[in-house]
Length: 489
Image 1 (cartoon, rainbow, N blue to C red):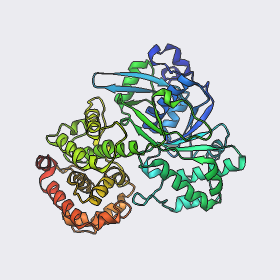
Image 2 (cartoon, rainbow, N blue to C red):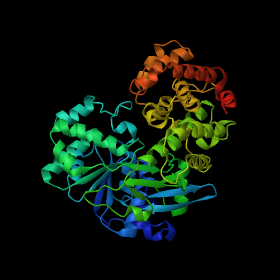
Image 3 (cartoon, one colour):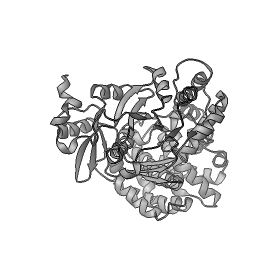
Image 4 (cartoon, rainbow, N blue to C red):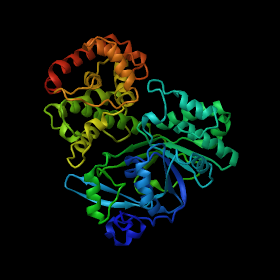
């Protein structure tokens, strides 16, 4: 493939003016390390960062570090760390090239260099999008899961392989170098993500003798991030090439809407994200809870119900008779009374906006993609809603229907008998528990409620809740999602 065929710095002058980066690529030195090179990061935090540098200047280029994956880093290397974001609206699309990346690296390729980067005084912020499982936290308790990999990162001199191990190695090196304070900022969909990251690092810092230094030198701003970013497909690459006139192997597509709520706690300084539209606040938790339970919770609900019913995409699933109505009842009857929204925000109106975004036919977000890693996602997205409603004496039947749909989904077959994939860190445990249980709805519910890293003891011991789950799983198993929705809507 000729270099001239690809998006790179040499190609910028020939691009349509409206598609060019807002900052000159390579002119800003690195000030941020980002762990995770996902499509979401490229369509969200990197876009905000470029907009903020264009508005306020500063050396805030991003070094993106992939903990494992290679393909995106290789594509970015071939393209001078440039890529494009195509905004996909119901009535059209637009494409822009992002120049906020100063570099992209793979942790396994040169872990010592990444540790040294975290110890550099120029790096003042570390951001993360490593998904729920990247933190190696117990979903039910929030405590670190000290498996063999993480223990080796903490107790041996081998190069770090886990994200928590990398953070601790970097902080140890930063302390030795007297490199100044730093903010570690989670941008993952976790409740109180800053608090959880602080707890993880504090636990590991105590084990490595740097707890006092971490308390004095490291902050953990909480965030709420929001943008629907489906997986890149050949269509995404084709749209980017049509807009740019060159191929972009790292292209991403995203919906028009995006938001970022950030706790303003950066001891080494920060860039002007607020001038790019982000909301800086003292307390992002109401926003986090609203988004996790409403947007993410409904997303998972539509994914499981839609996948079982045989629909390929979230937008297609929302055309199932009864599903939009069931989601509105989930929002109004279960989610809304479980939380206090941010000032000036109406949860039901927010939920309507969510459903409108999900129905965007230009967003090809596959149901099975959203359904991935359910054991990690369900606690934050759905189970906390159920816990709060049960504590208030209510039975959240629409939220429990989501859990029943997940319990049917992990058995591996849709309503028409077609296989559905179980892509989950606990896949083997789930399969093992199902294999050892009676192949009945009550047997399945009993087996899966026994996953103590997913279901809190209060839920596992809740006989009334168990009865509702058995009833709902029986309905889905016998009659399928379409008929069950007809009765639930």
